[in-house]
Length: 492
Image 1 (tube, one colour):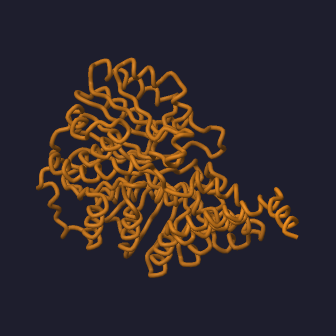
Image 2 (cartoon, one colour; image 1 turned 60 degrees about the horizontal axis):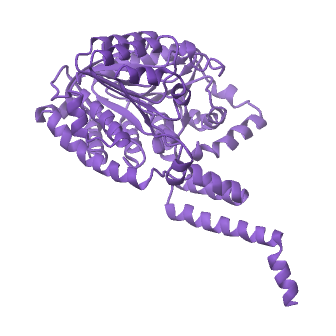
Image 3 (cartoon, one colour; image 1 turned 45 degrees about the horizontal axis):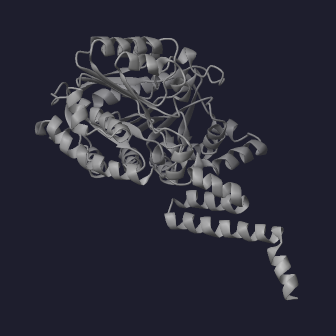
């Protein structure tokens, strides 16, 4: 009998079953001990149990916000350096904001941002909002051509062709003039661009070009390959900065086979005190990839103490794994809760976590006029259906949902009562909130909020509002597909 038992125990099928069981137990314990959000943890537990080997492999790839011990250590040093360099580059008077001009929640958001990131609100800035993508590329190219000392850029995607090549030529000219030029481009988002001749053309002209978060098998062993640098920042001479949702692409030459139309974006060109925290964000990213010291980079780029220019009060919040925990989410929640009369949101991808979903629903339920503008078509099939699963509960609470029909609306923005606004790179989805490195501007004041609200209105004018009654008539199969894709939301 013992021999029979041993034969049974050592049979390949028995060993495979035992191995599967060990995988389920081991990875379930790991998921539980990581103390992730409940929905995220349950989604992974289900996947690991249903497909033990496949689920475990997927978890190793994307289940944890692993960025490597070395990077975590450098991020901690970077966090401490932000405050010190801010004090050197920004005169103390430029951080003494007159909070009596703003709602109470603005001061609370300032404290929250300082605590989580270390970058305070600065006063004395001005900016111009641009929504014509062709004009944006031409203006960036012109700013580069007019540069006297330095040019710094970081983007998630660079796609050759069209007016993006005009920016390339301007950078080549800046490098040939002997300016300090540093370009940081994501390794995965711009994978196709890295295979072109353009990076070498820039280097040959004296431009320093670095790959952010390079991907590969070795990196997969120490961190996630899908943790990406999603920021978009341009700094010219330490005096002018650009940020917003637009990658370095000409929409006429970008993803034309995705059947979503041209991408629709917005950027803001700023001057004054807010240039400093944007520059520090870019400098910090550069030092993480190259090992150079922040002060050395700032000195080489010729970034001196900024001066006031304008009346806007703005706070820059860089976020991402190891840099902030839920700081960005806390800022967004506070912004949503601050709305008393009107809240308008634009995002290309809407797969929120439970707290943000409840905050938006709660705003509408307490009488705030809440409008959300999303593209009619997006380039991600999973996200498209997962997003739609939230529409019923939003509209049940009074949220108006507009489907933008003139392309893939890529602008990320929020305005609350036309007094506080958010503008930057963050989508209202789990990836932006927890995985990607993002940069977000929170602007306190009615002037920029008014400009942004007018831009949002143009999006509404080019959208079709969803009729809740008609929406409720969609088929059971459609609902099932949407709700199934929603289960993948924590992993998108």
